[in-house]
Length: 91
Image (cartoon, rainbow, N blue to C red):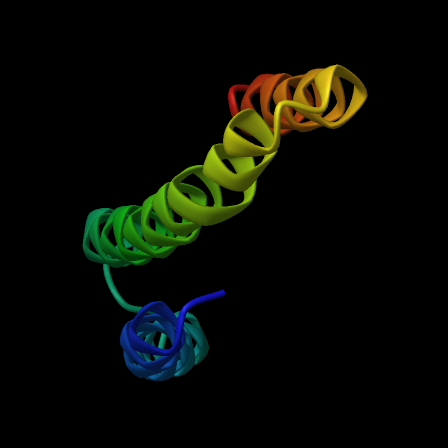
């Protein structure tokens, strides 16, 4: 993973960690259900942005490298890997 992507993701993950702790506190305090669900949705959206950044980095480097290498087996493996991770993320 590229250094810039790593730094951005770690910063976002730190914020998400705080969000999740806040959600736990809301549950402990028996806050209004809709408010908790709203915060859960925000944390999920933030995690999705991290996932997208990492996926973009992967395509921009690992997949691109496999394509540029001309190695058909490596290309097929990277595409299969990419398709599998996309399928899992949609479940």
